[in-house]
Length: 313
Image 1: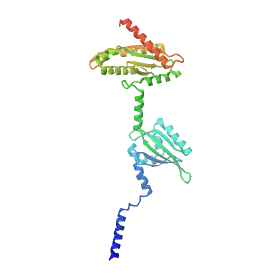
Image 2: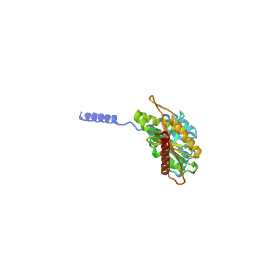
Image 3: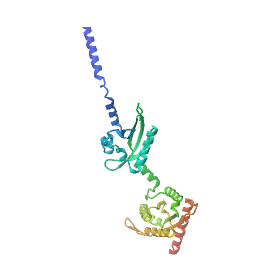
Image 4: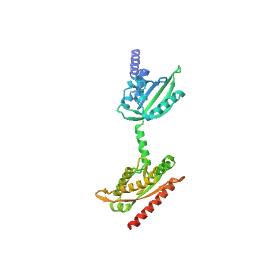
């Protein structure tokens, strides 16, 4: 009897142990696919001799809208969908990695099924089979949102928050680069200051003053050539960097800017009539941007003084 009870206990224990044992492991290929599905990126593999894709993870369907099949069936699928501006550098980086049997980390734009382009950060590794055959394996990570954020941050760093024009730092740096380019000569600065802006700002309020500055900024942008640079130095002071500025051209441009600024501005039903004083300075050999801005500033104040004298105010 005791022997029978012990036997039943051992049997029961064996059944309990068997009940909590994990299932046998999946086949290696299936385990690999299960892991790949968890990666929020496109995992791929290609033959090192002909660059033909031999594997592409299903994530390509979610991220780009393509099934894996065409990647593998079409020999140049990856190359054909690269952005034209990125194709040469992306292919070159892959080839260099293959030749040196090393890793490559590249960024490029890739055309999605809907025709749009997405940015990818691709880590490409070259592997050698036991027989010496080369394989390319990579992980394409969608970095489109990161790129968009970088663009927004770069724009914010270089542009005036109120008007959207270039801010002082970026404006002067760009102007310095223009001065250093012989093909831009002669370079002229047009320094603009809004006459009696403070009067309008105090009378109508700061919100109205901000709107006046935004209107002026848009008018300036529309009144300069695409090759010229326009920005806000601060307050009600603006600067235009004009390239290949012959005396006649720069005088005509200054007159055009004054006319555009003097057009009536409707701010919440209040009609504002502005005038602007413009100082012009043409760059001299070896002159720094700070020196040139200072001369344009002085020319603007002389123009403002002449206007006051002629109008008695």
